[in-house]
Length: 282
Image (cartoon, rainbow, N blue to C red; front, side, top):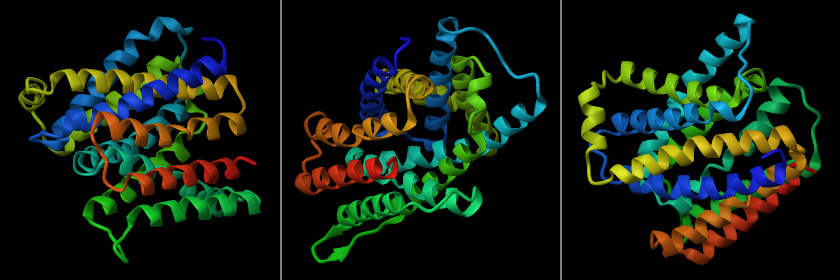
């Protein structure tokens, strides 16, 4: 577990499992808010189980806790919206759409962090945008529905959370950090939507119970392996390799979930995304 290669492999396996089982878990959800909170709490529980894997530590400076709470507000918004989005859109579509986060991070880096403009990154961003345009272009028109809009809003919330959250994980025991970034947003969602524990139980006792458990476990493991690979390897190496999950998810969804509509277009869009993300790291 002390090499970025092992953690990258773990990430790719777990992120594919996470995307596929998330769709199965929420496909019959009666209360999207309860489903989101339930998945987060299960993920938080699995995160806590991993605590002994790394040394126990947490920050003494209160600013880190304030930043964590701020980030969790946007994580909560992202996770809540993503639950509805994943319920109504195909896994292959969500996987590709979520890579718009690279576009937004690039834009925010230039506007707010005064990072230098890079032609390679700009071209990479344009390719990612082109992939998403290709994905939504059908029969001579550009197809957009409310779930695409919700997906974009969720991605924006995620990018804001990540921007606030930069380097916070380094001052925590990583599994404890994972637990907090799942449990705190879950609590926020339950408070805002006034979700009762009985509503969580109702979702968990449904026919998709096993998918809730698998999604929660893969969620925690995906975060763990992703952050751990970045801690042990170079960002410019890890990012494009992690991006290969886009193509993997499209292919697995084709066979596992039967998402066979426009499969050639989806594969081409996934490849374009990988190329675009690779360019942004050069």
